[in-house]
Amino acid sequence: MLPEMDRTIKITPDFIRSAKSRGEHIAALTAYDYPTARLLDEAGVPVILVGDSVGMVVLGYPDTTQVTLAEMRHHIAAVARAQTRALIVGDLPYHTYQTAQNAVANAHILTEAGAEAIKLEGGVEVVPEIRALREAGIAVMSHIGMLPQNIKLEGKYSIKGRSDSEKERLLVDALAVEEAGAFAVVLELVEPELAREITNRLTIPTIGIGSGPHCGGQILVTHDLVGLFPWFRPKFAVAKADVASAIRTAAEAYVHEVTGKITEPPISR
Ligand code: KIV
Image (cartoon, rainbow, N blue to C red; front, side, top):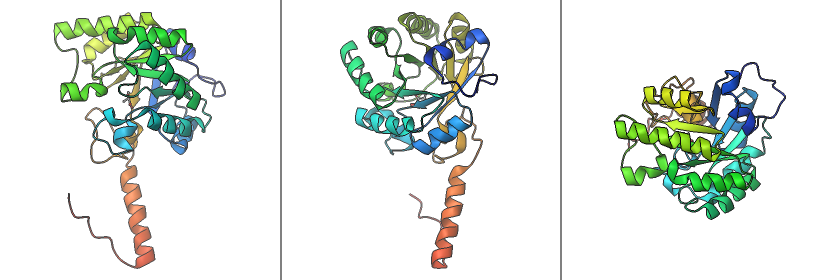
């Protein structure tokens, strides 16, 4: 949350871009539906990401690569109906920004659904797409470090920036996306000292996830924050609630009330 921020103003990409110059940290969270977006907005969260993590924590896919543009559009529209003060950022899903032209065409589908900015994964290799999006008047949040859309290529989710060559590449990526016009950059699973260096070198804010405490802000998948996906939670995410248990307990109480039966533990799969 940006504490001294006027709670009535609409958050814009430019406001986030200049957060660092005001000494403010950004607390971003994901939402994929109307009630969650409203609740996060009421809690003062300034940036709501409709991430392609929706594929894993809502749609039951094994990774984000199966998420379609139509699914992103559907979830962005639901979030946008909450008419938030928070900036709504929508992810361009896998294989929807291979050229500058299709990045712009597909981003327009998401902005028409209500996204106020677009996030895409990659550094130097997506600079032409970032530039084209900016020329089309679309605000861009970048995402470097561990790129979940590369999971099929890399086979695992691992920390980036441990070797000298990786450090150098990530620094070059960060400077390149800033220069191309991104208003903020997500650093995912970036080695914390490198994340600190990147944060110091950029004028736009870095928003970390699993990248240590020295970023210009943090982002989490809301399901991890509130304990709504109990079957897997990344090590860096500390749950501040146990919504999964609350749902189970309420459902068991309801089953008992209606049927008089006590719920048996499920057959383990
Ligand atoms: O899809 C997503 O939710 C993301 C965040 C984890 C940064 O990209």
